[in-house]
Amino acid sequence: MSAIPPPQEKLDPRVKRTRALIQQAFNELLAEKGFNAISVQDITRQAEINRATFYAHFPDKYALLEYSIRQAFMQALEKRTLSACHYSPDNLKALVVIVCEFLAQANNLCKAGENHFESLVENQVRKQIQELLEFWLEQVRSELDPKTAATAASWVIYGLAQEWSRNKHRSPAEVYAQDILPLVQSNLQLKEDG
Image (cartoon, rainbow, N blue to C red; front, side):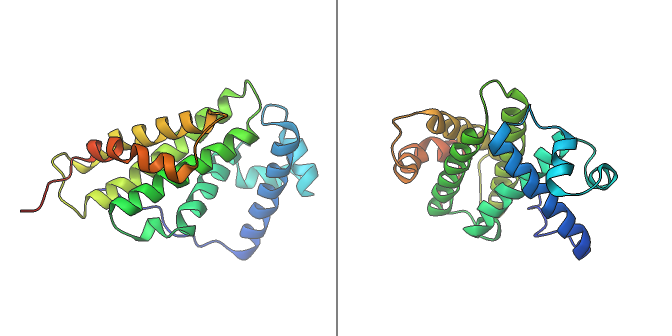
C-alpha cells in the first residue's frame, strides 16, 4: 500500500526554526561553494548554531541534503496541489513539468563532479514521483499492479526530465511535457472504460 508523504510532520516550533536555520545556511553555502566543499562546521558557522545542535537534527551533511531535496520537491508538488489530487492527463503533465523545472534548478546548484548530489536528487525525486503515481493509480484501473506501473513511469519521467534539464537548447517545460506525455502514459497502462 502506498501513501503520499504526510503533509508536514508535527514538530515543536523551536525544532522547525532550528531546521529552517540549518537548511537556509546549507542552501546559501550550496549555491556559493558546491556540496563537496561544504563541511558541517561551515553549516554551523553560517547558521550560528553549535555542532551538537546540528547533529541533534542530522547525522551528517548527506542526511541534510536528502532532507532538503525531499522538502523542496514536496513543496513544488504542494504548490500545484498534486499530492492531494487524482490521476488525469493534465495532472500527469503538470507532474512532468514540475520534475523538469525542479531538475533544471537542481542542476544549476550542482557543481561538476558532484555525483553524491546528483544521486541523492535522483533517489529523493524519483521516490516521490513513484509514491504519487502509485497513490493515483490505486484510485483508477490499471492493467498492471500500481506499484509496478508507478515504478516504470517514475523512471521514465525522471530520465526524460533529466535529459531535458541538461539540454542547453531546450524547449519550454510545458511543450516538452506535452511531447513526452504519451511515453509516460504508456507505462501506466490504464484500462479504457467501456
